[in-house]
Length: 105
Image 1 (cartoon, rainbow, N blue to C red):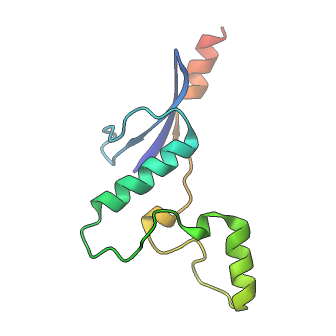
Image 2 (cartoon, helix red, strand yellow):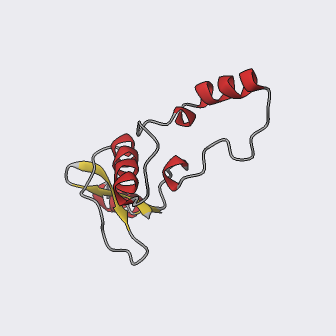
């Protein structure tokens, strides 16, 4: 999935699209909510036996993750996590730049 940042009459919006560029999420008003929507969506799509009890991953908080790593005194190969839902979210397609130029011209 790709995160799209766009701009409309209400301001910045975010939404997720699949590999065919089809929208799979509603319009979301903030980046943080877009991140949370993705996590919930990926958990809902998982068909295996879910062992995690919480959608909130302690590794998303960088200071907690570094403190945990220091206390274990090890180097982990993948400190962000193994699942797609653990990977950091970034804006993949930014449509807002051109729309802002038009808006302010």
